[in-house]
Image (tube, rainbow, N blue to C red; front, side, top):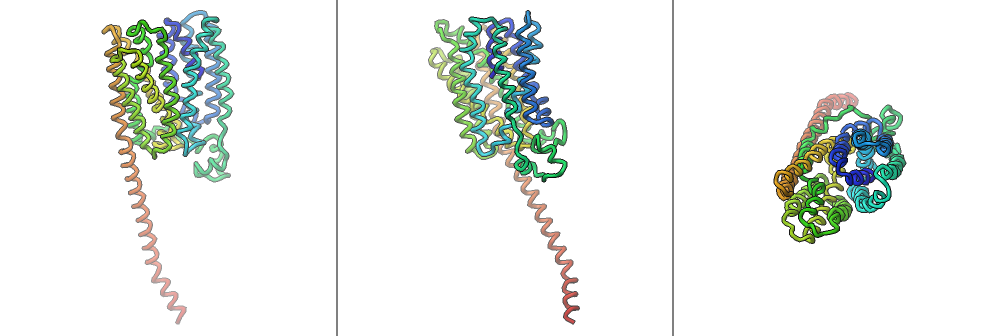
Length: 421
């Protein structure tokens, strides 16, 4: 929430927005693999609290600089890194407390960011009109302090519940680790998750789809300024995306709870298909009302994609490995998020309009969605192999037990006959 608000403030200053905002956006996702390791070692509570404190320091120090250059460090790196440390544990902790309604819970939590995406620009407009940028950043530090306090609510699970999840018993060495998470860390960096073929495909398909995913969110207002010059409330297009995104997170989060297992991926496929098609339709809208309709649909399926990311990760790798699974995925996502919008900007400079950029931006989500379609089939095939192997092992044990009984039966009969004599 604080990150979105401060990013909107920075965006109002074009010289700063060009590089500082891009750096901060990339850093918040680029750091997630590192954050996931800290989460496994120290737990969600400690990681989130320290991250919020770092973000507070970065944002507060940004409000005292006298030139643009220090913002690359204070805002682009320190503040964004702190937000990353506070953000990633929030995706992991929900799965420790909720199972049956995990999709709905993720929808409710992520819908909060949509709500503040709508409300904060109104507040920031008032602040920036009456105060300068740096005083506004100091006010936003209040939100970071609230985030710092909220991190303490990531209370560890009760020992009995945690013992059931990790399969350990009280009194042994593993119970010392279970106070922080489900089981003791086996490795600092868990590359074994990439041996799960379904997760590996997911980690490739999502970043590929995001190569064009964020292009409309970055360049849509500029496109509206060029195409619909007579419109006065051009920012309403992003507000429409934010409103329906919140609705989509609640709606599809609830729907995901009724979709069994890995088949939740089909909801992400659906979201990528619609977002890709809506991106291609943006240049075709000659009436502002049609563009509003496109943005409403795009926001709805944006919420679908975001709300079910964590539930799918839990289904693919399980609760013990989900932290680094989400962390690596978000790290991979930082590359297309940083590269895609600048490429669209270069196309605009070369061709004189955003039409081709929006047409091409719709292609990666469609390709990524097609790749994700294979995940349920890969996962079910792997489960059949595991079940077949398990059944074979059970059969071998049964045969061994039967042979041992048969081998011991002559001795038993002999003892019985001797006792009769």
